Image 1: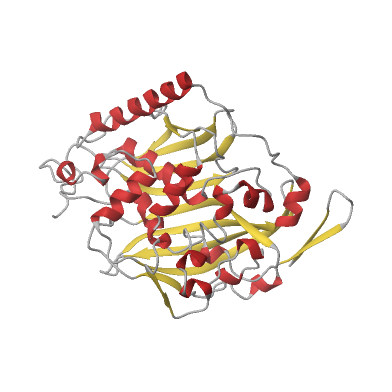
Image 2: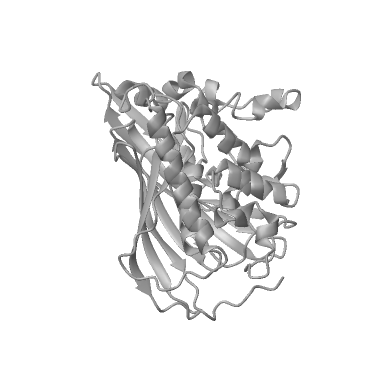
Length: 404
């Protein structure tokens, strides 16, 4: 498939996606996490995502007698931290020279099992489909979807992630300059203190629910607002280091084709896999390679962003954590489908808001399921992400304590 458009100078621009066609429906190889999950992986993840829910970092709290799990357990957002490409690898197949990618959204299906310390997590991957359209951001743009299925070492399905990758010509994004290179917002000390107070009040609601079950939910209920930020280079770096893929030699390659590293990245945004055998920083992605655009304005502007910007996988995790914190430990996220419209930028404040749009009573478990509409905005009320999720709620008797 080829998409054509004209750039600001009136010249024809084409995006040839024919190299992608042969990858659709092909089981992929790629990296698999070598070692079992350990408690500090969960703690690092909670810390990196700024999620102060003690269920995920405080082993004393998590093992209290009235706890559902009896031990530290991973939030449902943690699955993506066990992948070597944020779950987006299947959606980045086929070589298209001069391109970069942004996250366009994630759809999740959760099947019940939770990730616990001691488990080995594996995954299957496949490119699902793609379409090409013209956008104000980069002209001809491909939206491709790929599936990553996560399994534990018992062979149980944990969840499936369908990630949308936005692949575009970086040169066209620079020409169109949809995002202007404004400076970071300036926050007064009083504003920063007020933000910190609101964050504290949010996590007080999490602690107040504690090990109790969330009952008496009704349509129209508002979820408490959660604030994250203002974002900084330090906070984006901390997020990056919470992903297992950023640990040197944490993954091993398994048999099967995979063109993620040969997707047509700009030379400045490519990893040096051979050099990384001597100096792993060359394959790290943060200091050298595709993720340095998140923390260095020079490379952000190279691919059409104005300044340092956040990770789509983190945005998805913030949303899942937000839903999980509200539902409490006796709830389960069943499904989530979120569209990402713009990344969080350095200096910006992210706001998460949710509302119960419906309650269903047809779940096989016999438990009610809340449909929650989630909107993520910044301090200017620009929508960064939006979508709906289904959260299975507890009753006074169901579910019973899980086997420990």
